[in-house]
Image (cartoon, rainbow, N blue to C red):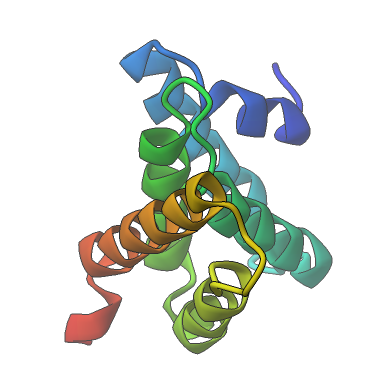
Length: 123
């Protein structure tokens, strides 16, 4: 079985099935059988996923967005923190190159799509 960290690499791959399995694996790794969630891993995963939707590498936006939606389905109470993180990590700052601005705006869009797909806004 592949490690938790390997799943983040798999989220960016070109194979849709691999991305879907990786997104589920991230969610399952965070949702332990005992019901206890490792808050450090959860915070790490959310931050990495929000950063990942900004990447133009292969299919990173699709995979990381899917995984972010899966994490929010499993942990809907994280919505407020995720929304704050999206604004912080995709903030446009003076001095950014046009390409960096584009990556951040696309990342913000894909992150908001994940929030919408998770159904958290309807609860």
